[in-house]
Length: 488
Image (cartoon, rainbow, N blue to C red; front, side, top):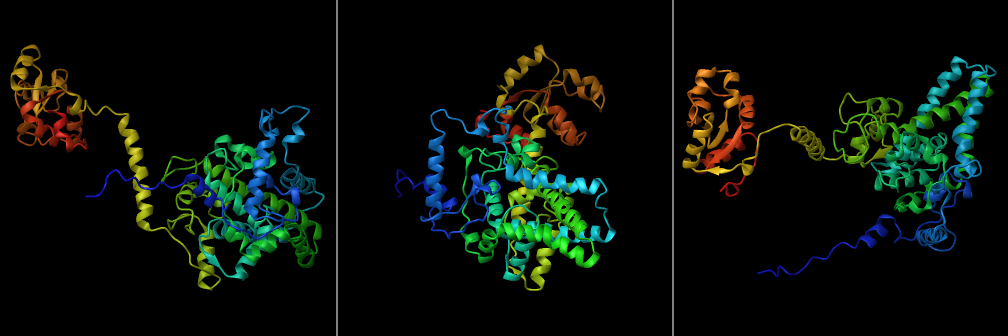
């Protein structure tokens, strides 16, 4: 016989977290031209000088924590005042996400730069290029590895993803992996529990708390030469593809350089940023949770409309490496269609899908949870295990004091207050008082409905000792699970 005293080795959680963060690997050095001005670089910086990437970062993390040990508070933990408000803000993102769009809207709304129809439609076209590069490229390809792509498609995503001014592939994907690893916790970069505004924009406009700095393994990203190239040259690529290129196109095609800069450049960037931010905010607040409700992500067709199909967020968080967000034919997910179409022409391959069985299991489990919650709010009658067990003599003694007792399938019911309400009439139910009416109830006179069983269950007062088996089977037909030995 096997020795039952032998204990299996447990997973070392410290080591497991090191592996999840990629801290066990020597990583390629990839330096971003922004230096310390990078968006939320304090959260996800992955460059290094002489040591391995993670060794360098973990040492910096340790130094940062030591800096704020002993009662000293980081600016994010301090209240906002007239003296320190400027320290709370991430000024680079304030310029990119708020300042530049305000300039663009000033020229647009003041009438200084009129919008031509040709420029409008070009802006829409350019918006689509940038949007699909974020959803199909940054998100589903790089952040989640939901499929693989050959270099022409990856290069396309890198160029036009930069045109959306949402950071480099490496920075964006690293942040997003952290979001999935720590969803709805203080380590989640855009923690939805902190409010709609914070998850939408507040997280990037304010300084992050280094106490909650997190890491995720991005070794596969730094192994991609296109990711490295874009990260190293992100500033010039962003300026060129987001602003200069659309302005030059509009100059060449429509003789409207300024209109191209304002509408196809600045305002387009603002709109696509706001649409993307909705994935972090609205997709965690608005909609249904058909797969799991333990966390905030939700499925919402409205968000899907403005995010190229990324609105089915509850599904996505349950099945993150599925190249689809929408799984039903009528759900809007143009990104899924784009990825599938690209596979038909050989630009992408190895499209991943979770099994239909796993998806159906998630749906059924969540439906059961909802049913159980509704069930818990209803009166289903006293459970059999909580009822006293009477022998026949005890039943006869109780009949003397209460003549409204009836036995049905081994369970004693007090129908005194139901006699006048009985749909079959008072005479019929009075004829059953003090007797065993099992056969009459179960089809001998009436084959009672499910509702009749439920109403009857609310009248239970005891179980007859000789009828324990019958009572257990009777209750089981209503979905109750009782072991006979608990009734004896």
